[in-house]
Image (cartoon, rainbow, N blue to C red; front, top):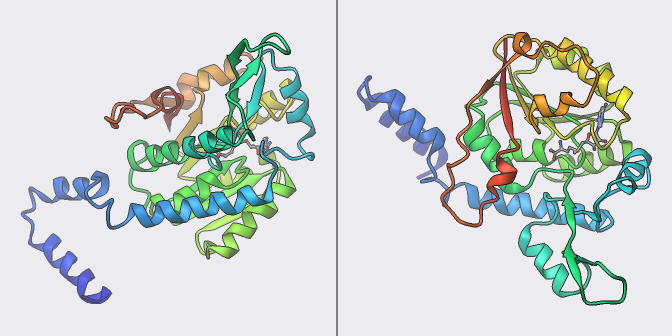
Length: 301
Ligand SMILES: C[S@@+](CC[C@H](N)C(=O)[O-])C[C@H]1O[C@@H](n2cnc3c(N)ncnc32)[C@H](O)[C@@H]1O
C-alpha cells in the first residue's frame, strides 16, 4: 500500500468508529507502545546516530573550555564527580568505555590503594529514556504547538521532540556559541530545519518567545552555569514571561527546589499549578525511576 492509500485507509477507520469510542481510540493511538515496531525503532536509530556524531566532536566529558563558569563550579563540588552526558553516552556505551579503561565509575579513596568508591555522575542533557518519558507520557499531544527549550546545549530536547512528538516548532535558546554550532550541524545533516530553530542568546533577551510558547522546558538550566545573582535574575525573567494561560512548564528539578536557595519573590501558587505525572508507566527493572521523578510538570495559571 502506498502512503496516500494507507493514509486514507486510516482515516476511513477513524470515520467508521462509533462516536462514543473515538476519544478512547485516539487516546490509545497517542499513548500506546503497539506502534513501536513501526515507528520508534527507526527514530531510536536516528537518535543514536545523532549522539554518535556529537560524540566525535566533543571531549569525553562533553564540556567545553568556553564554559568557564560551569568548569569553575564543578571544581567547587564537594563529591568527586564526572560529567557524563546521558544523551551522548547510554549505559551500554559507558560500560564499554569502562571496560576499555577510558572511563571509570569509581575513584580511589586512598591514593595507590584498591579501596574505591562510586563517583557521582552529572549529566547536562536528558537521556533517551527521559526524553521518551517526557514526550510520550508527560506531555500531551503537541500537534501544532510551539516548544521552547531553555538552554538547549546539544539539542537533545529539540531532536527528541522532532523524533518523538508532533510539535510543529521546537526552539532552542543557548548562550554558548560552540554548542549552538553543534546543534546547527545536526539540524542541517538530519534535515530538521523546518521544525527546529536554535538561537544563540541569553534567555533573558527572549521575552516574546517565552510569552508565545505552549511548552517551556527547563532541565537544570541555571544552577551549574550562572552565579546566584544571575540565577535570581533569570528566574525572575522566566516567571514574568512564561505567562501564557494554560501553557506547560517542564522543570528538572521541581520549581520549589530550584527557587528555594535563591532570594526570590516569586509567588508560585499564583503563577503555576503542578500537574500529576505517572512515574510508574514503565514496568522494566532497568528504568532509572529516580531520574524520571526529577521531571516536574506545571500548568501556567
Ligand atoms: C543542563 S543544560 C540543559 C541541556 C538540555 N536542555 C537538555 O535537557 O538536554 C543547561 C544549558 O543551559 C545553558 N544556559 C544556562 N543559562 C542560560 C541562559 N541564561 N540563556 C541561555 N542558555 C543558558 C547552558 O549553557 C547549558 O548548555
